[in-house]
Image (cartoon, rainbow over all chains, first blue to last red; front, side, top):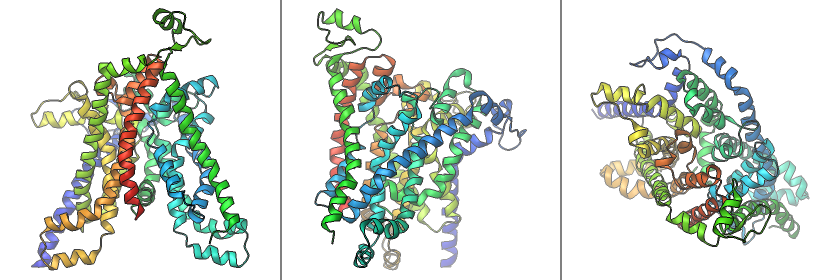
Length: 276
Length: 302
């Protein structure tokens, strides 16, 4: 009897959960489906769910008309570049704060986090003018620098919480054996820190990939990544739904896949280690 | 413990990040403050200065002091009040949807349901969708009054089509933004729920504790910390919502503070006014940040 009730309960919950999840996922699913339709099918009322002429031509047209690969390449370069340079200065900082904390380390970390609270619009005008005067508008280098600074606090925090979990006894043991700071860093710390660093990279690539405010404001053509590519489809003449869907699918697919892999790290990273 | 050597090395290791972040914060801020006291228009600098404050030009860019007039104009611009209420509306409603909806949904997903991992994948997906894509997909394919999917449903139900972006632009923006952030809250709260002690749950069931008081006295306190974190993170991002408004062209009616500053600066080329607006936004964000940082500081200590 008890089992029957709990099994019914289980299936009720399952049904509700699947229904709600489907609703939430539907816009993405619909976009993907529409990207394989002809324009006629895409605008059909009532909507055609699965029974339409499947076609891949939208992808070809989108690539041809707005050069998807150029934008995608920019997105990749910006995401990886900004992450790389941020890690370059974040790893030593996080390492030293985790293993040789001073009295002010906590305050320093809080201060770093507080720089994220500064609204981008507060810096938009000067940055725009500096970029204009130094010829950095619409350059990858300039945007990499901005994205790097934008995510630096989150990267440091994330690395810090990961590094803190490395037991310091191991370091002490290494020191007892006479390992120098450098050796300690290379042979003891790095191997243990790699999973944390990998998670940090993953999360940061996602954040940089989707960053829209600065990329919309500071790029137009040459250095423009995918958010700008999609925004160009908001002009009235660009409104062909199947093509818009194909463009959207191409813009979100890589990061959606990465994101699904990065779920756990995402929780941990974006909550600064408070939720694991 | 830490040796003298490693401590000195530690300082050197921290320095680049601290210096970079300090410059990143202080240089634009100082420039914004400076600009906010100038009459400074990129398009037609002469006009503004010579007409209103003759003989006060002081550099080759034809800038001149404006005193506090930029602030005066920005703060008394009816658009400012509207933008501020829109900012608060977006932050407030999306937070409410995220926390209440996220908690309920996380509780549901925490039950023994079939295929939970797939459900979780579907739920978190919107968070990874780039804001410009989310905005365009919702605006065109779902909320379009003629051939949008939602209007097809409402028409089929006999309610008629809703022209979201003409009649309810703010609701439309809130829906789009909430769609992206509600999954984030769900994922974090679900992760927190899954770390809840199973034995306590069983004990409460054995004792016949009513589910509601179990939720109130046991689950909710356990969720206090993740909820704090969700509020902090989402507030940071929600105060700065921009792409959803920019792309959907709802800036006129649903525009928030960032959009208004963008409008002043890059659309009207009024650098002085935009800078004053930027400073106002910074001050407002800092008021919010002050309380949030105290909250999270306390919460993250333990």
